[in-house]
Length: 328
Image (cartoon, rainbow, N blue to C red):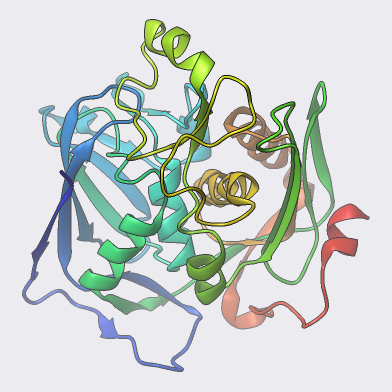
């Protein structure tokens, strides 16, 4: 059973956020809040606490079951190690944190810049397989603005990576949007396409509840390789061995839940850039590996990006659909 624990942090020096307030300041949590659950791949039970963090400190994990400085694992694109069915971070000491993408997506969706995440195991709890429980935690903890300007990564020219039929692109655009296309042989999924101009409300209503998914016939092989040991119908959508039917009794949360989850994953993976992105992402059959490869390609070319303060650039998408920008 998943559990949530809230804790007030007295005297934390922040500026309280208010409705309609500036979107250009950094944000952190108002209070600490915790949860308990199991790891999707490890099957191990873990306790995790999201804590407020100082301005400019970023998103960091702290393995409380490990002593010493090696316990800190930064949420950074360069720290990504394993990308088999999840995004796993590894620090210089070899300490890992797996399945970070759903939590990072929630932090991105709520515009949280600074957070210290205490965890007593090597994998973020899967909860229900979506970002919604983490979004709920953040809303329960509350959000505060901090006296430091928010920086964003502005894409200056198009960057594309390919791996067979998998393609991922970041293109210049006034604000962050995500478009993902998937195509599975499974009749239950088939071809799906979803576009999201990211905003706090849009993230919550359009993709936060979309769950991870898998195929019945692959479960035994995955578990033999140390993956999906904590997976169940409680935390994943499972397609039956014929590829035609969803095994979950309650069915899908969205008619196109599969592609929406891929959008959610991309949002989480791209938040490892170190801040919000001013650019349009387009992924075709994309996954964790190519999402990280795209960031590596981007940062390998300093002429393709620049860091800017959000006070000096537009922070909202125009009303028109930006898929033309994404597709070029």
